[in-house]
Image 1 (spheres, rainbow, N blue to C red):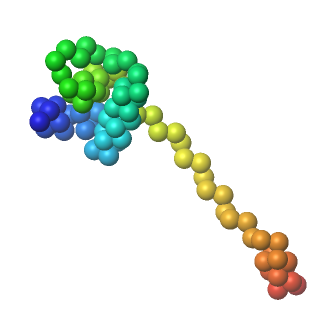
Image 2 (image 1 turned 180 degrees about the vertical axis):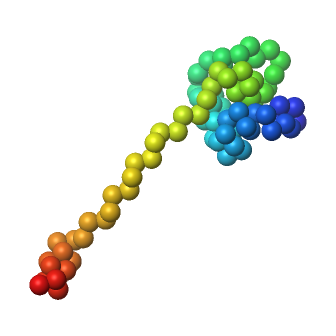
Image 3 (image 1 turned 90 degrees about the vertical axis):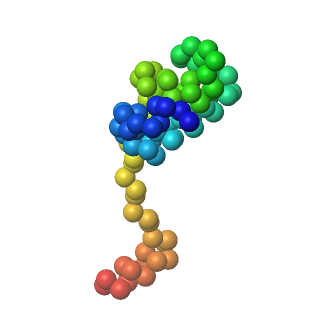
Amino acid sequence: MIEALKSDDIVNKVGGRFKLAVLVQKRLVDVTFGAPLLVERGNRTLMEAVIQEVLEGKITLEIPERKRAAAPKAAPAEKEAAEEEAD
């Protein structure tokens, strides 16, 4: 097992276990499809190298701000029926 994952330091650094899992998975996909590693791999597995990137602060998870959900608009027939009821 990867020693860095036994401690909560890496979890707290990223902001939680879910965020850590998402970050590692996205980075593994990127590296698998050709993105260069930001740390020396040496004799580490790809997963260990990605965890080292997280520990060194070389990668972070950026979550875009959620847009406020717009209220669903009524269909024209429903809108007309609602206006007639209001009158």
